[in-house]
Image (cartoon, rainbow, N blue to C red; front, side, top):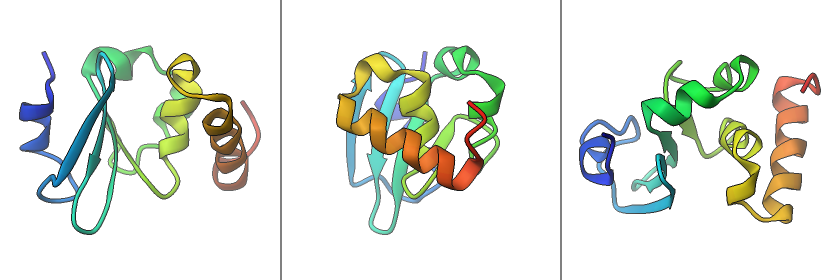
Length: 99
């Protein structure tokens, strides 16, 4: 099972300074220079392939600049309408509007 503790050991953005559990298997991490979402393997497998493709590391990490939108679009019920709208706009801008 993925937890904040064991995923923070392998966070691609460096040492975790702040972490937040968004929902079961959905985490937000911040480091001194970057951050983003991390998903459990189960959550990652639930994502549609076109959203998985947004991961900059080709796995369960979605950075805060662009690929974060994939997590919000895949699991919209955990985010407010403003976040959902921003995620759709980000996805359309950086990945195309083929959702």
